[in-house]
Length: 194
Image (tube, rainbow, N blue to C red; front, top):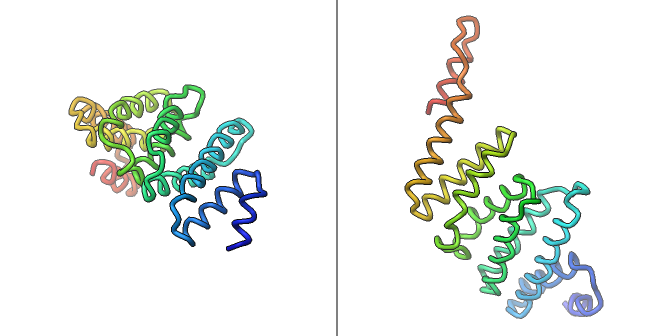
């Protein structure tokens, strides 16, 4: 452990510092390492977004965000600052919908204690707006499912209805005309009608 304590004093790379502080946090259970790990994970997220156009893998961003939310929730670090950072990413028009989907999914899966329903108020509308500009079918479906989830969390009945109608229309478009020569079509259509 002395090695890692010495390394955090000499290292300057946020990737290494985040991992060292995260390790020290788990080993020592000292909450002072939590805020330092969070600070360095936030730097990593900013770095990933700055090189996004150079083709970094979106999953690295998502994994880092998941760790960041997890530490922030578990050790109750500067939650408000993290929420502001995440919210700014979601409202940044230069970010691709794919990154925003990963952010929304991280909020859905890991941010339950971090984000209150009032913090999620504009997320259903944002998901629907992204659905309208997205072209990839898989991403469109994920956005609609997220819109349904967030509108349910915020008790926004109008957006809940709109998101469900859009999701139903989206599924309806997947239906294929019956074909007597291809029995798989009926099973595929049955799956989409569920």
